[in-house]
Image 1 (tube, helix red, strand yellow):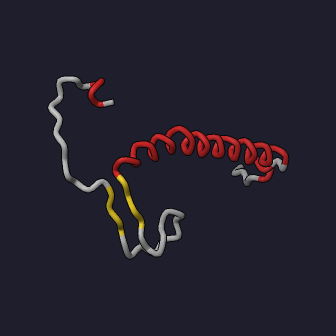
Image 2 (tube, helix red, strand yellow):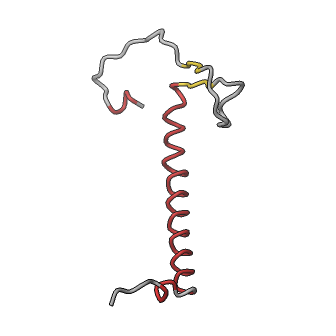
Length: 87
């Protein structure tokens, strides 16, 4: 894809590792296995794209719905009628 975007860019091959394992982790994330998390450069863009396309909109929809439900319950319970007023 980069060749299409930057056809004149000089390219070269690299022997750099595309993955790295992080050890000694104590978390319970599903990608952590036996205290080790393997991070791969070549999947990073796909994972962030998936998060941007699916995770972020889902979180924002959840926040919107939660705000709507709280507002509806606040109105149903008439909570504003029970706030102290200063004369």
